[in-house]
Image (cartoon, rainbow, N blue to C red; front, top):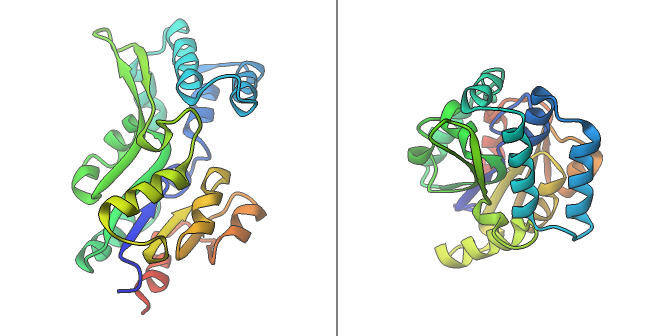
Length: 222
């Protein structure tokens, strides 16, 4: 087996009709672009940590009176990529270690892929904590975002070390700028419906059709 582990991004990869879930929620909840972009700029300028960024966004939603039901309504407009379950099942049958490495939110997996914990051997995503009134109350960075800055590559390197496989034995499927370092580092980087030319160039393979079954020949070699 050339690739022992296969990793997936979520927004734009396991889910096909979304860029970043954070931007989608802000749009649907009526958060002004200037507010969202200001927080994003502060993060990338190193003025706030990822946890602070997420916590401030959650505080905005709370102030707007957003509830869990509002999140669920937005998530109901999202669709899984074609062939997702079939692809995961075939990879599991082939003995691959499957993982998620994503800046998405756990509530999305809980709603769209309720069996995700049995499908994946390892899941690293962020989480919104809701209070007893189902209002967003706190933000918990996902495992890859536990440091002051996001680093999917660092998390992947740690995961590989802990599980005993090399980066060269890993395939990763992603679509956006925050996947660039991982796509470049792994043995097989697959740009799935890539959002721009940077992502397409960083990967060894580009899939333009939102059907995850298209990745199988490249991973399985058949």
